Length: 82
Image 1 (cartoon, rainbow, N blue to C red):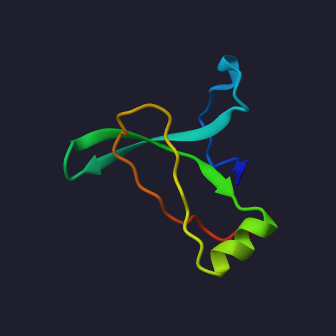
Image 2: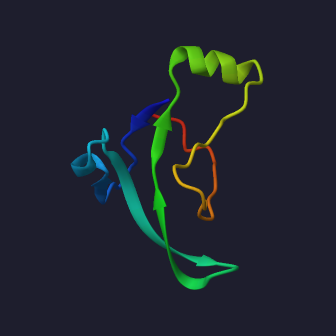
Image 3: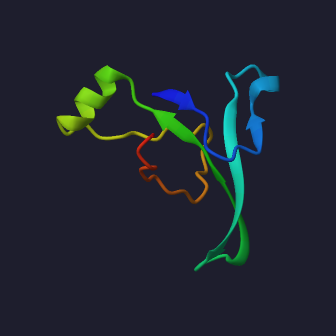
């Protein structure tokens, strides 16, 4: 997957630490577990043509998180580009 630029990006994380840099959009949501005013970060990822072909054939999406304690997270599909 290639890093995309999420619509409404508010900052780029990780670049100063030597990573490519991940554009994110900061949001506040009403979470049923953590309550109103819960912060969340949204990033965008664009599959390469080969990855898209694999996804269309049923390959799963793997989410890899560095560390040993994963934070609560969601994986979803964004809007179709115009």
